[in-house]
Image 1 (tube, helix red, strand yellow):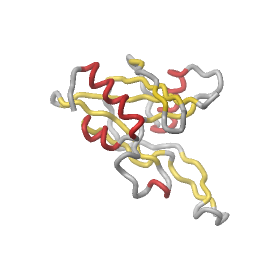
Image 2: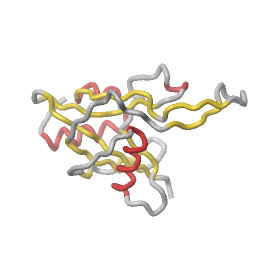
Image 3: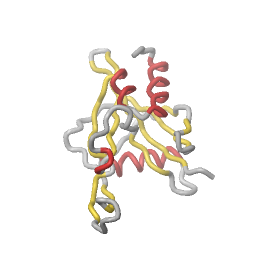
Length: 155
């Protein structure tokens, strides 16, 4: 069975404009990559783990933010890799200036034998809907569009 991921897509309204909270992957490979590389905060589910519980756990691990409220299930989507991604939207707001992501060890440069610690996610931002769709991995844009359809916003 292919691995599955679960994530949270926070959204908010500022002066009637819709914004989405997304993140940029950390590490040297992604340092200069922008449009089409950002992601919904998500991570792999543990075997037997309930998807929403995994999504909430991953959000806490990757942002250090405890998120709670009315989670709206979105249609699961397959990524290019074949991985099935479960996402819940939530209308909420929080500051982004003190977000800290967990880290992982990476051999860098490749085959050098040198290990460095890098954040799993290195940038976090609230983007308007149009910008979020531009920044996100193409396979995740449908999640934003689904929320836009639910709240009646174009973008």
